[in-house]
Length: 452
Ligand SMILES: [Zn+2]
Image (tube, rainbow, N blue to C red; front, side):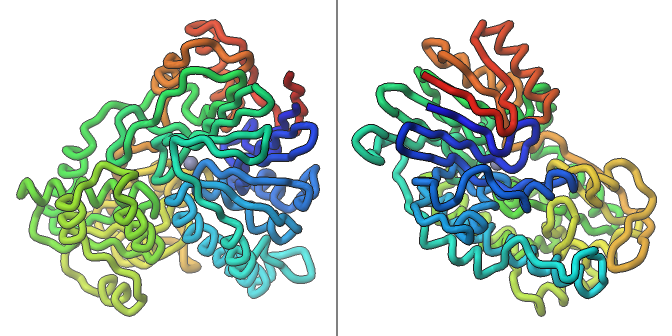
């Protein structure tokens, strides 16, 4: 058997692991490269395998860096099924259609402004390509073995990273494989904790936080402090928010604060069509999270969900104090810009950062202390308070990854460390070597690993 990492090795994006037996080719995750330009250009390169030769795709979760290449695979002739959990399918639908729309808009903008060196910019894929991917999804129940054929079995287990996220286990000709996808937190805010696994021959584990520990802060109290401080100054609190998981976590925390009568009496909005759709999917998948009916009811009465443009514009214009959650999470686009246009130059207001901010994004510029940021064609002076809550993360940190690994009863024959910058993966490798004494290797992109 042969394992090749076509992405998600030496980087946290573009996850694609190809597992080949003597007669079947299986692809685990099919993600988009994101971030730096040299990575994004890889999305335009051909895969070393024809899409039509792949027999089956298995998706650990819906995030774009794990799912965003699927429309290209299908466009290039992939005919098989995409196996995943039900919640993953529902979220992937939202995420892929949005991604198609963004690719189209980017190409359109490049053509309008003649950014491009090519004759005409074309999108990597469009909304229709994304829509064509959806009929390939085949949902799979968790915690149960399924036969792909007589020799290949697979099973999905909760990984506690985002709604619907899973580890994927294979049993092929008597050998076992585990692909971790992204591993969640030991104490997630809304999800059920990851499952432990006792045995495997081969393990592929992510290492996004392989070199770091998350800060231990009381997130709810910190959030309340920022709300009260801004309220007392007469300002508005604006929270750039990721649509999946983070938006629902914050709405939940706000709903508890409301039940505890700690919130000022000002309106709270989630102004994001994708955030609203993701929240609806979230609340519908009751087996995947800890929320009960009362929690859900309370979340829906705490926050106004806003999708339509007219209402959004009216809220942007309204000068009254409020709390607004809006996308995009790194302020790379989306409705949050319309709020910032009015609010960022007034010291009464607060911009609260609640997620990872990649290099080169406006969110990163803000937390780095930039005095002005550019959008809508001009520079805006930053006078609002910029604050950050660092305790939010959907990824296990180094100690949580080790906690998950320590529950294996026997060391795997070989452990591959993927989904990390080289220093992150290397740090986890050292830790695994020292604390567990396991044989492990940092996955290299496009290298073929032969396994017996
Ligand atoms: Zn993820």
